[in-house]
Length: 328
Ligand SMILES: Nc1ncnc2c1ncn2[C@@H]1O[C@H](COP(=O)(O)OP(=O)(O)OP(=O)(O)O)[C@@H](O)[C@H]1O
Image 1 (cartoon, helix red, strand yellow):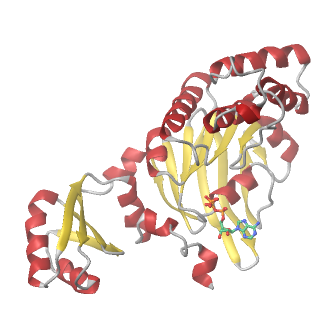
Image 2 (cartoon, protein in one colour):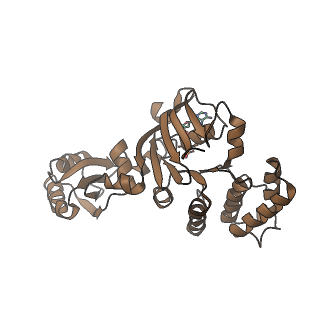
Image 3 (cartoon, protein in one colour):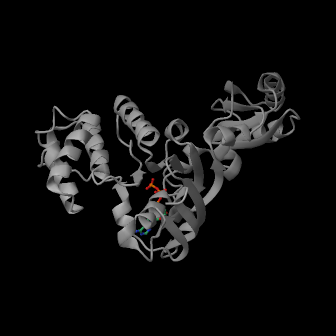
């Protein structure tokens, strides 16, 4: 395999009038965790479906583990493991049986399969529960079994589609630790999709921010954040007064730039947040707009997303912002 485990170029996928993936390109260095970060409906799952040979692109090309997904889908399938959003664990089978069944599907020799299953059960903290039906497992245990199933046949590239959605904070933290360990100690390449900013920040060595089927920014989390000079300044307006008047007032403050409103929250940036705040408050006060709270912080991935799309991440994920609804 070249030093690139995944190479995606100008990928396009349409479903009727919706362009789910709209000219998407990125590359994943081998042995790293790469994050595709975007709000619901951004096109992440569709991209993963194409890379895992479950969907055909309308245009563009993709190589996974050095193999072309369109020309050699069988070779791609043998080289990858997949953990999809839907749990693929058989609830009636035990943890061990689930792993053995998965390995048998890949034609693994029985003895090798048994020792691989034991190794994975131990690694994912499931050894004690290995003989119990998976329906008796907690959500976190089922998810860990799911990831273990994706690893049985020793794939070179593992796809994790929204791996921690629905898990409680403790189960999320456990899975994060295991994912980080897999990449660090086993040379596995992991392509992770997520709509959690903190998950991308914590796990991905590099990430691509996807919006409306396109990559709008790419780099390490630190690189992306350090592109935004200075501080983020967030202002929450109280329930009275017009947002438009507040936007107009802040736009006239020389110390801040890139002002965006999301509901009654205003987001802006300044070279020195602390010294900009009094000017912002004075301008709002002069415009008759009352403020509930002000916060100054270092730029986060949310601010990176805002900078590149003009919307906050939360706003883009909110119901009613899916692309087909916007188009309707
Ligand atoms: N089979 C399909 N038929 C019609 N539209 C689809 C289909 N699959 C996806 N889409 C649409 O394509 C767009 C991208 O969806 P996709 O599932 O790839 O996004 P996502 O970023 O993975 O979001 P989520 O986190 O909600 O899965 C959405 O507007 C979605 O409604």
